Amino acid sequence: MRRVAVISEHILLRQSIAQLLRTQRLDVIEAAHPAALRTSVPKTVLDLDHTSIDGQELLKQLANTTLVVLGSAARLAAASDGVAHIELETPRTTPAALVAAVTRQRSPQPSPELTHAHHQWAAVTPRQRDVLRWLAIGLDNRAIAVEMHVTARAVKAHVSALLAHFALETRTDLALLAESAGVRPLQSRR
Image (cartoon, rainbow, N blue to C red; front, side, top):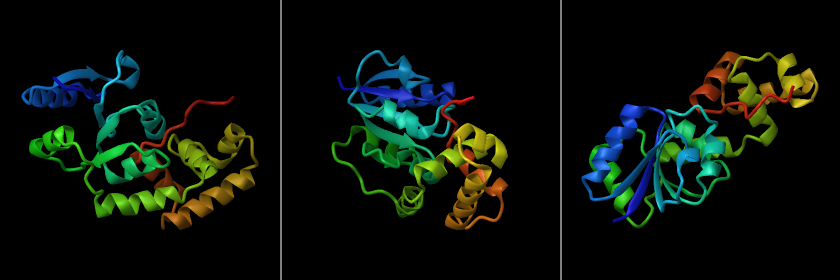
């Protein structure tokens, strides 16, 4: 029997997916977080939309498994920048499509939506991503500067560049983008 992990903080979604996969005679391990997995698995279904962990960090924790990722294209693109193990992004999946993604041996082509979002997020620098992490929780430029050990002027420049890059008008729009993409602070440095 093939082993598959299902990771989601949303218990009903996690149990539903696990039940669906068990009908395919798969050995399913359910977990709210990757840390709960006590054994390695060849394939993992990851619910990226229902996680309190920063998406990029979450994907790094799951680098030793092939992932079938459920979530929005923006969230997946933001999380997968620099992570090569993404098999599939399925924002509006059906049960049959999910089963096919888990049981097939080859990787499908990414959707045009995912490709566009990935190109946008790939151009975001690590410092800009850090600014977005702090914007996502509502910090102003001065507080972000303290967290990042830079000047408020440097933060302002990053915010301006991000606004132009994503064609947004306000820092609130950036904060909402960061939140919807699952970009969260790793930890406070204070």
